[in-house]
Image (tube, rainbow, N blue to C red; front, side, top):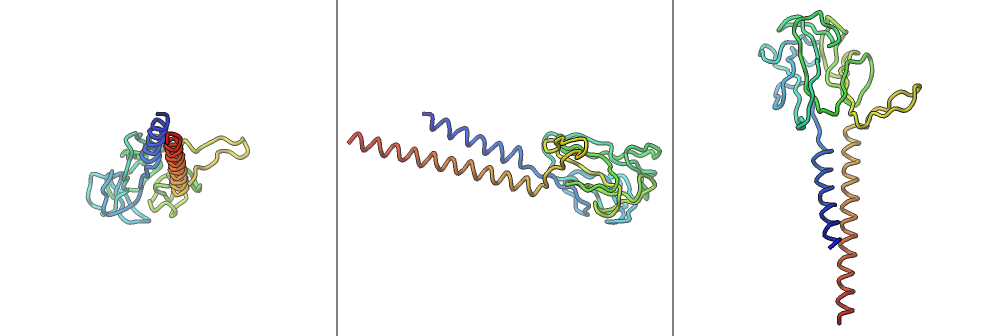
Length: 201
């Protein structure tokens, strides 16, 4: 009986790891957005911006594959509805606000000249700025996964989270270990049944 219970627990663990830890959110500038449209851009870099509900620009910052649990950040402020320069969300001199939705375990903010595992967009300045790809400009909207941000010391600061590729590799490794445990349990179970039959004979 306890073998059956163990198998059920392992199966539940595999499902939990596969569906709750393994999601991957995609942020990209594209002309074909199948997810949530955040803001439109005149080009891939050195771009002016416009509100997402307009259609003057072909490029759009797109968020795809969001999980069920999300939260919204104040992302950008635009000077005008279209053909606009932008400013970071901590400034409030531009009238048009743009928000962005991310997973609930993401911690995001504008940072100057810092590298992160997840950078969504970059600006040429903190205000009156053009926009571009994550590596184009020094002002970057960076996100960190909360579960992996751990305090080290006042000198070292915060440890950056592992890359999405490393997270996926770790998940695959854990699932492989679980399957190996299941295989060992099955072998032991079959061996015990054979031994039992020999004793009965």
